[in-house]
Image (cartoon, rainbow, N blue to C red; front, top):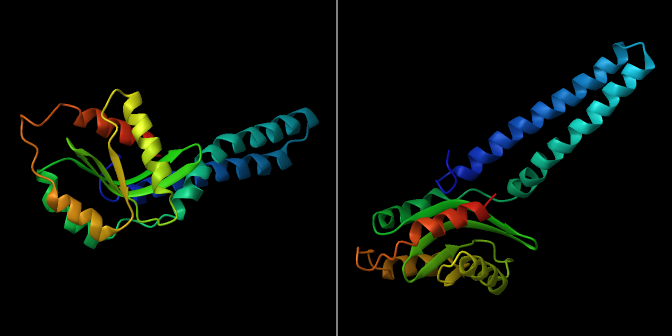
Length: 186
């Protein structure tokens, strides 16, 4: 399943959990194998390999811990957004991260007038998130006009106000913005 599609978060969590469990089983197998080895040098090697196996597992598990606290996009909200998919590109189920920001984005709309993101988490500092997104957009030589919204009704109202993108209005930046948003998402 590709980033930005509906239910991506759930599929990503399952895939990450599968790999974490695989690593845990490998670590347990190495520790059990250690008990059957008689030479001390080989016991030490197996122990070291088990310890080293923990590192990639931790790299997989840390995003999983973050993603586990984020609920999936409600089907009702997704159904409300589907009619607009013909008018402009919409990404779903993103978790945009920076050094000091974890922002669950249920939907992100890319339009010539700006990038509109719906983040249901009221604890996210909208100004900081918008500043980060605008800096990233400008860094990619795109218009830095990102708006983060915490209210579902406000976001859906904004969607209804946006006009269909015509060829004259299309500046060709949408694929680049979509690529940027996907790259910022875990």
